[in-house]
Image (cartoon, rainbow, N blue to C red; front, side, top):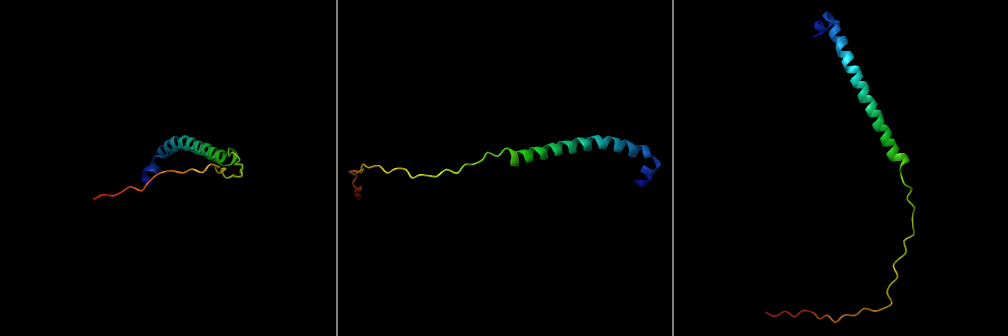
Amino acid sequence: MEKIILDNPWILLALVAWMIPWKGWALWRAALAILEIIYILFFSRKKIQKEEVQPEPQPKIKITHNLQKPKLTL
């Protein structure tokens, strides 16, 4: 393998010329994704306001029912 590269340096140059733009494009995309993550995590947070929870008022009317226990017959 090393002999092929040493005998033909143009192959190495062609591979490098092919890889550099693709790696640059991939790194650019990764950098944009990191910026998006930073924006989402730190700058777009809505501030949560703590509100005091008040209990619901209890009804003043007493509710009664006329339910009877079911009778079991065998």
